[in-house]
Length: 343
Length: 286
Image (cartoon, rainbow over all chains, first blue to last red; front, side):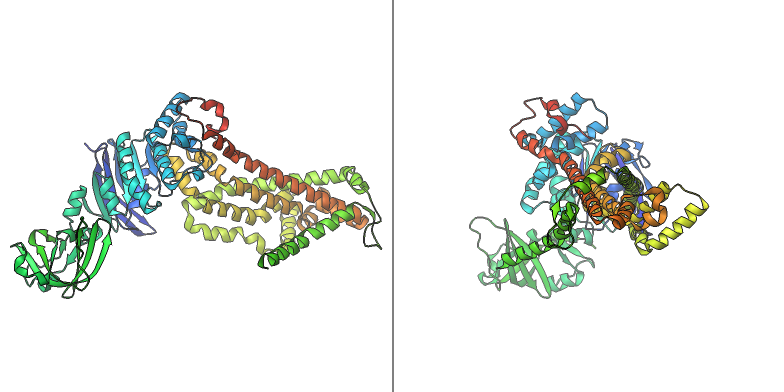
């Protein structure tokens, strides 16, 4: 049974449609990511679920109860904004306790639950700090604790990590998932960062121009993108048109687009002789020239010109790995099983 | 060299600002100052005479009451209005902003004549209400723009949405979250408006004149009688406005006195010591 059911939600701003018949559901304790580029309608969808915007059409059910027309304060849905929106006039403790106070819990419960939340986010020593005295990461954790404190039935997070710098963001991704799972909160996480979505969520919903392009587990979305948009948005897929395939492999495949993950392509320096390499019997083989080499932490990214196409190849940067230099002529091996139809 | 130039500019600016105030004050405490560089002798008699005049005290109180009344009325009307526009109709804000600026377009004399004809001749409004209404209109641009800037710079909309999602009603969200976060702007805009109204003469003289004598009307009448007394009025008025400003800013800072407590709280572990109730306003929600 669905915990949250969103049914055919549509919305428009000034006659410009922003959401078209959006439907999806969410299981209890599940973390769902809504992933899409800026302006795709994901934040509008979040505001509609929270009740901050009334949809033009459609229904929202939370635990089988129609909440479409309920005001935000009666939905019991917590929200964390990108800016955190911590109340600047209240210290950390009072910020977290705010929701409990508004819901008229007794003082004992307010204190216990607030301290529980402070323990969960490991910020007991900052209980009396004002928001401006906290770092970005700490503010983010306080915003999360504040949203979780009044026992929300659903937690919504609107790009909560995007205001942080890269290093803190990386560290907080897994911590965020740990905290949400520890609190047992059913959550929707909105982001435009595919890596973030894959690390944090149990399921991903990819959106574009107000429509759902694909829905599935992170693995499904990554390994089997349904169409060109998803393949282009998720990961760093090489996208080949039928003409590209014809040029690269001199083979005739179906007249459709193909996506190939960069880590599935093999390259071998040409001068060592083609016969010496364990080439896959069912692969597209072609010759190319390395035009650029970039080191991105644990992987080495090669750009290889094959005819008029530029192919990206990722190789694991293992100990002792010898980089191929720009200008090196290489044999490129693309296994057929790595070709994924996205047309 | 660069620093010396900067200091010179600041010094010239301070002289430009403070010299008239100093000269007025000096004139107000001089017994006679006509054909000499400095006053012949100093005295506090003009202040004694001024504060002993019940007409002055009454005029001052009238100015304060009508000024504060107009500011309060302005805040009551404009605070929710500006917030609602920002929250629900942000695209209409430019039209409302233009409308709020209209009082700047009409000359004071036009406004006064129009108001007298309509409200005094036809409806016989009491002078206080007539002046209150006119003052509300002329401070509207100050209040509107001040509040608009406060809402725009303070992330108010997301704060409001967050409070709603935490179970607060729209009124609770507005009172507990929005107001405390724009209180500085409210104080500043109120003071600016009150200072402006305390010094307003044209409308007060044309609309109500002697029937509701404000401090500026009193000052105008005193100018004809005695320059020293007029200087004492200006100095007293300046001192009063300065005191109100200092007091208001002290009140504003009072909320953030928690910084000192915050520093003390760094050594305090709220988990091991349930002393929270003793820590006063820090734990108390508004």
